[in-house]
Amino acid sequence: MLSDIEIAQQTKLIPIDELAHEYGLKDEQIIPYGRDKAKVLIDTSNPKGKLILVTATSGMPAGSGKTTTSIALGQALKKLGKKACLALREPSLGPSFGMKGGAAGGGYSQVVPMESINLHFTGDFHAITAANNLLAALIDNARHQGQVELKTTTWKRVLDVNDRMLRNIVTGLGGPANGIPTETGFDITAASELMAVICLADGMEDLRVRLDRLVVGLKRDGSAYTCKELGATGALLALLKDAMLPNLVQTIEGVPAFVHGGPFANIAHGCNSVAATKAAMTIADWAITEAGFGSDLGAEKFYDIKCRTTGLHPDATVLVTSLRALKWHGGVPLVDIGKPDMDSLIKGIPNLKAHIQNLQRFGQQVVVSLNHFANDPDEEIEVVKKECLELGARFAVSDGFAKGGDGAIDVAKAVMEAASEGSKPLNYAYSLDESLLQKIKDVNEKVYGGGKVELSAAAQKDLKQIEALGFSGLPICIAKTPYSMTHDPDWKGAPKGFTLPVQRLILNSGAGFVVVTTGAIMRMPGLPKSPAAYRIDVVDGKITGLS
Image (cartoon, rainbow, N blue to C red; front, side, top):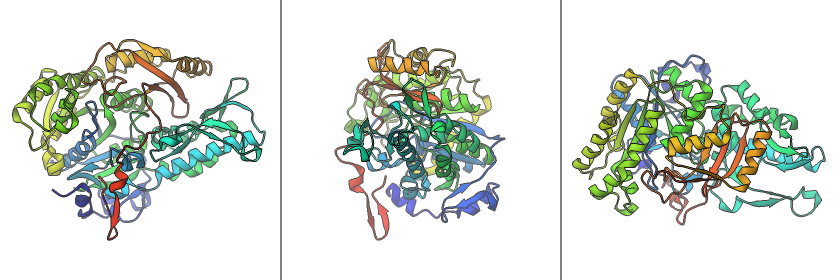
């Protein structure tokens, strides 16, 4: 079989303006970025399409195939004569050059142009990075010029590359002309508050409101120092204006896809932009979107943050898994996950059951989509199917990687059946009226299966400060490992009753949530021993090695 990038580069693309016209967009609504991608201006005030969320069981280093399944589902719906559209996240350069690789799907279920989407694309990440760092520079300049005296500066710089050396740094060294020496650090762009702001803002006026209320530091009296008080909102709006517009591309089989916004789900809220989701629901009858990593991370945040603040409501949720993922959670080493092993599969099944029950607790109709590999034993597939049906979930096998839309017809039929029955009103994991600590406890107990919550001394201080500033009514966004239902990546399956250690609470007032970091989670990842960057090249004018 050809590599992902070879398949993508051999695909004959529909000119982007033709695809847009096919779905009812007019010339004045299309801003082309070459022949194969465009930004769109679209009224999303009346989105009518059915919304399908795609999530997964707990992650593993080899990935779960969630984006591939999302794309295959969209292509399968098209083959069944349905008008479908995708709303996906933009890949970050961090994983593209790091360990995970790109995020444009795989095999014959990809969004294209794959190499553009995985690299610079339309420049959204660069715009967010520039706006973020302009704000940091303006804050430091205001301090240097004596225009404001801050007890603490909370706004960090960002970069869209994994770089552990930048996690903790000191700026302003070398004398007064270089500013005020400050202990600070970099986050990765995908984990930045501005990324979340772009993804949750419902239009330019909402973006202005969110930028105004960004808390960038604390004044000597303990009160919040905001972007509005600094006077930086207008400049940020100018840099972010085009980045707010959804990007239109297509799948290998010509299904339109809005690929826009890219917050990580392990350290941010893990959902593409509200603008993209509503755009997909506006131009199509079926809108397929995804939330990062497992249901304990992306899906929980999709429901508790994105749906709560926008009024969106999925008609059904697809839970992606594979025999390999379940065996890994049953204790099999990564190198052996492709081998038949019924005992380890059965040991990993509790992870699947926990995710199904989580989604059902939120009120969702659940379709389990099993990513199929050529050597998957039929008897092992039957075990997984039996468990799903016993729990009241629908089940289908997906061959979307190898066969594109044809390989996901059964998944599409199960999704249509589930959506026709309809999910219940969302049952959030917590109430906004609860204290921040109680919200953390609720997610830990109801979603992760944990017991106690322990706050570090720094987290206790953060909690008091956030409450004193009046932000205890915000939703929470828990940052933790994607490889376990717990905070510890080595705890596989579905552990129960564990204690969740909270390291810090970080106010994201513009985004409208409080980030809760747990375990050893970092907001600036590092590169692995053998980064994917070593395998990427340009040969005869074509990019090679992207995956």
